[in-house]
Length: 173
Length: 105
Image (cartoon, rainbow over all chains, first blue to last red; front, side, top):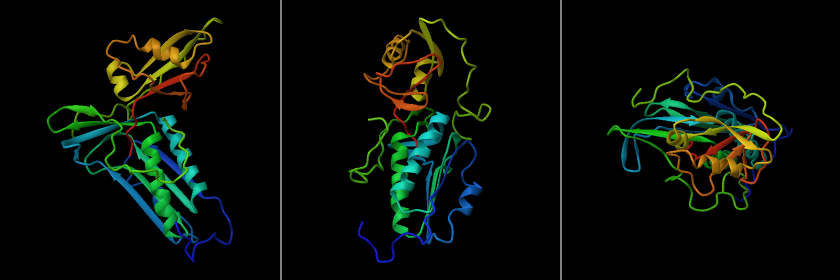
């Protein structure tokens, strides 16, 4: 990432605020996301993962996420804390939903506030990619033909190479 | 809600009370089976008694006898809610989770 002339630390260095949420309630209405960031943050970026109506060529009718709640919370927290150290951000909120979800509903939501946009994009991508590798959450899909399946680790959206060169992942090998 | 999923008390997974204390030469651990492992074995949680000094790998070997449960050669495991190696030695009351391929996001 080339240095941009306007980048740099804010006048007073405050540690980034990190909040993680694991819930079976809808993420769309979470109040925490509305008040992210401070007047030092010139950029706010939100990523949402939503329940898609198809997967690997099959028509999906609904799904449920099973979580190992205590560990999922801990792993998600660890990923966000790592992002807070790695990138120049002011605040991070990451939420994952579990339980049954309808098509189109939000399953994961990540918001980053930062002085400048580059750190928002980098931190957001880092968190979602690490989440998919490390956070113990499982997807049980139901299909239009009446069958169901536990979804494996095959991820069509995963990047081809290492996202951040030299990154150390503590998750399952 | 489409599909066969229903909320049971808002959670898909429930805790059970702690097991009674075991004798000195055996330990008891709580084993959690998530996702496809839970479905294959028909139970998401169980108690396993082991000789003192047993390792995670010993729990995995005992689980291989469960009808219907197919585990990889070296399944991913967590001990007390952190990823752990199969070599980790277990203590009374430890929580051992078998982690099938995760699929969050």
